[in-house]
Amino acid sequence: MQVRSIGWKFIVVIVIATVFLLGAVINFYLALSVTCDDCLPVITMANHVQHFILLVNILLLAGTLLLLKQRLLVAWLSPGVVGFALIFGPLWIPTPPPDVEGVELTAATYNVLGHAADPNATFEVIDRLDADFIALQELRPTLRHLVRSRLYDEYPYQFTRIVDYVDGLALLSKYPFVGEPQAQLLLRDKSVARYLRVVVDVEGQHVAIYVYHPPTPRFDFPEAYDDTYLQWQTEFMADMIEAEELPTLLLCDCNASPHSRQYGLLDHELDDAFQARGLGFGLTYPVRLPLIRIDYVWYSDEFVAVDAGVETGVTASDHFPMWARVVLEK
Image (tube, rainbow, N blue to C red; front, side, top):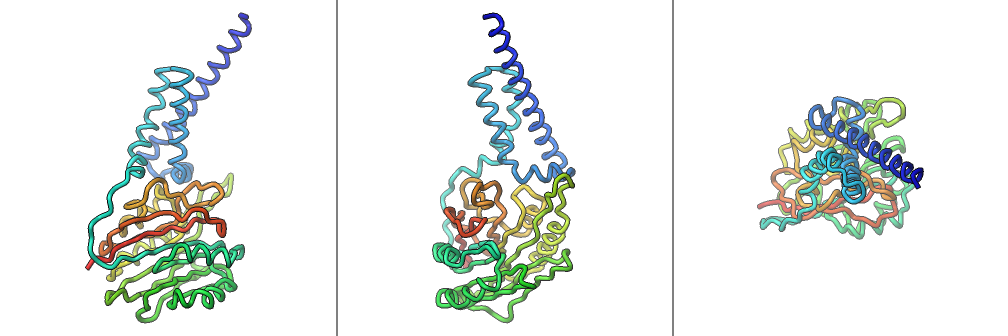
């Protein structure tokens, strides 16, 4: 019996030590994240899944309270719980829609998965979204031809661009275009953003809509995290938005989470519809095990967000579409 008692005590000590070490790692990460933000590549990577890191901290604290009953250990894990409450708590508090007058519009963004796209399933998703404007990323020639033919009645105004069969962008609109749309899909100069810019006529008001899809950061292990090209292109896009004179919507697979420095660049110029009107984390990628939110509907000050959400239950792509209802104020 004494040997068994010693064995259990040893196990408890190991568990306490493990929880303590995990808490130390989380506290260290939280301190660096607050004080130096993106000063280290590992912190930049971890920021993308900050919500899960702090959720693990909460589970550790709950287990400590229920099983270990170690007050010092509870105090040791408390910073992560406080951090989660401050950072993510507001995301779960519903707020009433604003009372605003103007033209209500629905905008959506959807990465359709390139060569692996299933046309029929993709069209079902687009039909479910029923948006006034839909931005498509990773559009390939085969699907583009089908979009033009099968969706023309619903979306008579379409603008698409594809470069070297590698990647394509599209804007589908129920509102007419004004002037010539612009496209920039250079592949060689990675400092220049890949985007479309289309001006639409919304009941006499001109609105600039951007479709944007920068490259993903490099996660090749054991090499350092590298988001250089993503940063360059997002800086380019932020500068364009800053110079824009029209009411603006930016629809993107931005390949950046809400805790990235790229998000901060865009958030300085525009408002994130899901941040303003969504509920929860709004995870959009990947669909089999959603981990992060990288798809966005952004809007300028001439708009007010009424509602926003993620179109879940999608199997046609590795992204969930993001949609938002906004009002263009009169």
